[in-house]
Amino acid sequence: MDTAIKIEGLSVAYTNEDTLTDLSLTVKKGEFVYIIGPNGGGKTTLIKAILGILTPHSGEIKILSKKHNIGKRKIGYVPQKSETERDFPITVLEVVETAFLKSQLNPFRLFKADEKQKAMEYLTLLGVENLAKAQIGTLSGGELQRVLIARALARNPEILILDEPCANTDPPSSKKIHEILDEQNRMGVTVIVVSHDINHVLQSKNRTVFINKQILFDDIADERVLRL
Image (tube, rainbow, N blue to C red; front, side, top):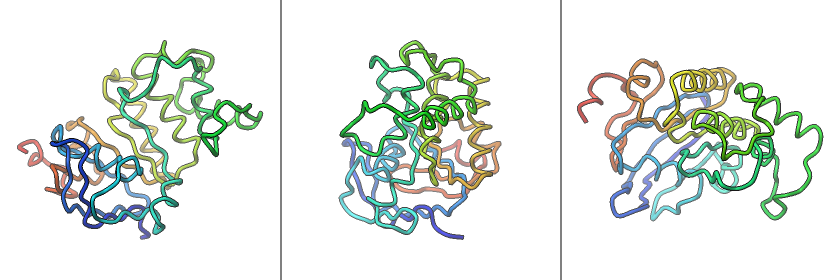
């Protein structure tokens, strides 16, 4: 199986506590991987290093067997809800349409009819098409997460990375999000999810990686992680 992400000897610091040291990890194409661990253990630091938001002190990251700056274009990313700007005057449909921007130099260009149609298709997939004209600041936590997932999918990614996608969402929204991620994975998308939902992780059959500064366990989904 081909490699989606290959990390070797990665060391990176985000804060004094949230660091990673000499971490190596390989994710194959088509895998579904949960990343779990304590607060400050480096989960979000790892994701931001993969995305190029943080620069490692040492180590190498390859995405789809390509140099990092090239391969990361094939990633769709859903940040933590707390990282999302909700006061900006933009509609739900416009949020998803930003997935089609090739450059940040012209963020307010007019979108083509086929782009608007495709954006609506992803909103429909996530069950929030009725919110297309709503301002993002009016959405609930679960609604916002669905919109951000729709935007990530509109990029037609080969790799989908989500940081706590079900945080502060109600059970129906959480269930819907998990169903969408499973379906995307069945369609061949590599899915990586940072999660605190230990109960769901333990019930799933997907690969689980436990991180606390380093990888402590890989591919275990049993009660041992609950004692760490």
